Length: 198
Image (cartoon, rainbow, N blue to C red; front, side):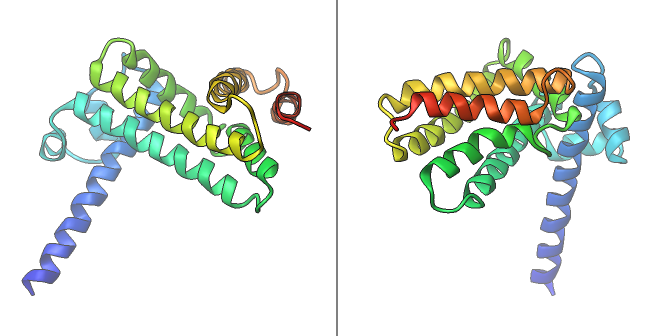
């Protein structure tokens, strides 16, 4: 009986942590950094403010956990896009790059949370470390996909293509009517075709 109770408690704690992380992402998206506080997060999560301290060492710890969780979620989305593209190296590369222009990555709420994370990464060492690790991982996986396509200087190409995808994603998130997701995909495909050996 004790074992079953412990498993249930652990599951409940994980669910509460996840709920607080999801609430934090939502509050960051809706209210930005200025409107993100313990009261707003706990109201969104439907829990008392005291509960936050039970699972996190304050709001800074919770925001950092939210950045890590959001990065992990994006990694899983990109990995699934690659897995769904089959065995062709170019199809896998294109799927990885263009997943940023489809739901759920294009969710407008994600932009609000992501820009808050970026702003914090400029002034908070822990957030900067999370940012550096997240982007290094993305570029490393992109470099591997580029190398599988025979790209020369895959590491440098990964930096350039990451910046291109981020810029297109940001513009689409700010104004979806500006050029559209299909146009973004075409731009990336043309860039890849120009950069890779025939």
